[in-house]
Image (tube, rainbow, N blue to C red; front, side, top):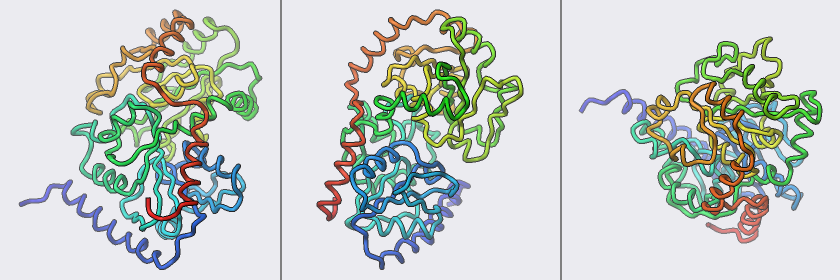
Length: 404
């Protein structure tokens, strides 16, 4: 039987993974440190961010005797005292993971990773409710290689944290995971509920804005066909007309408005830029800010497309607008969506004119009523205590020891 190109690629990846896994088996000669916890976000491509960040901060508040390790590709990333950052190389990854009592991640472990008996892997994932399909929900667009990596990672996970029955019902397909879950809420949402004022002040001070400056965050999600493209605001490739957007926001809500742009981390990791021009001085490129939650917490409105960030914004009752000018193309590429957009409380716009009209006609009271009813029906657990609950899980694990 003749092998396809995909078959050859998969075989090559598996051979490479088996070879690299030798580093993990070699490191088993070292004992597991009962106080070591290793954190990773998006395979090391991002810095101090997402759910692992807020779990680490909670642990730092509680104890000073833990060895908290963060695997990161870019050693220029900043971490607070008490976090030991380690360059995310194969050798370092094998040693640190092999000798840790606990792993905390928000994405997939690499295919060569091997967990030892007695270690505990806590998966926090980087999205709870979501619009775009992931995993098996992508259908034919979910590659065999991606499924192999997903199943390899999921087989090592001991507990996946969730925030709702909706998430728990969808993880077997969206995350390709059938193991234990624990409904704790999302640690990254805690700061949106109890630290928003600090986020607002810090962001405005960093970018030289007055305290009363109002901000709309524009955060488009990742598109698999855009890795090699410079997405230029000046050319308005797939982005809204920011000049008209600012004018409409100012007219509708008054005050001084700026647009905060945040490209997806998978784009910034590839050094893809926003292409800001001299005419876009009122647009702040926050794409390289490590923590999406702190950026979102600083803003007054969210403009996105199919990003799970829309739900994070909803938890703090921000107005959310969905700019979906490539809706059918995106559905064709992803194999569908997880929600009928018309049944979400967010305002949908297929082009600039519709978006601007939606802003002009925005009724805050009606939006709040619809949003509150939506969240109540789903029985979402997001109450600013998620980090503490997850830290309790880890503490129990460290105190109890043994296999999960």
